[in-house]
Length: 228
Image (cartoon, rainbow, N blue to C red; front, side, top):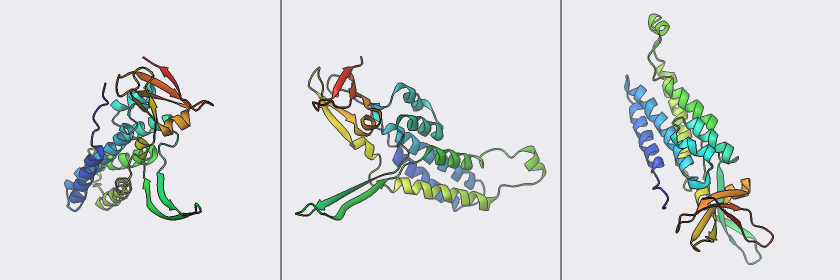
């Protein structure tokens, strides 16, 4: 069966971030709504990271598709991909006649959210969304607008760094191509998962057969085992 359509989470995150900027320029209740928009942006980017792994994740991580807390989503992925939270750089060079490396033609970084940062930022923005407690109301303690704007600004800096990447989810494009033993259709396996775990789950795009791909043996051929 064909893979599910990708949800444009990064576009949604940009929209939430833009709305937050507008709201932060205002006063009163608008500031709380700015915090909500920033929380939604964090959630969208966490879901985008999860979505980028496609079918390469196992059942223990697959349940994260129903989890709304970004820190839990990213923590589950970290168990699946030990370097999933690390920013990954890519550079393309033209080699000289003797193999020497020239100036980079492309040099970009896929900046990732970490579970720790997402959890703290999400919680920080959420702290401004709750009803004031009895003690706070009785003491006349209002929301510190200066602190709110400072913390929101810190979150915006982090989100901007992720959204500025020109090669988001680069791991999606790093794949090995195989031929399906059943129908000779195309099978692709995430390179990063295969390198780290030694195996990865994949589905034939033609017949829908599900396979477990293991690292290539001495003959250079992948070991594919039918899973369904």
